[in-house]
Image: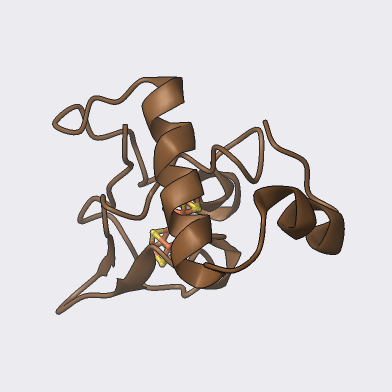
Length: 101
Ligand code: SF4
Ligand code: SF4
């Protein structure tokens, strides 16, 4: 399930750099999340990083994008391949110090 940003967003800019999938970007009036890139941080972290840092708690789950953990992991893998098509995920993990979740 992707997350979305509500109109309570105060444009503090804190969440954008924390997203490991570059899914957060400035919108017309508030920040927005691309549901095609949001994995709930599955594959990178145990908790959604944007939720952890948002000072006004305005990033809930979006029920219109219902996805299982397996589907989120598959989305993560597809995103990783698009960034590094020649490399293996295992190599990515070794380089980044991250581990698959
Ligand atoms: S949950 Fe993770 S992947 Fe989704 S927008 Fe937030 S930081 Fe990015
Ligand atoms: S951290 Fe929260 S308030 Fe700040 S820009 Fe992101 S969504 Fe908006």
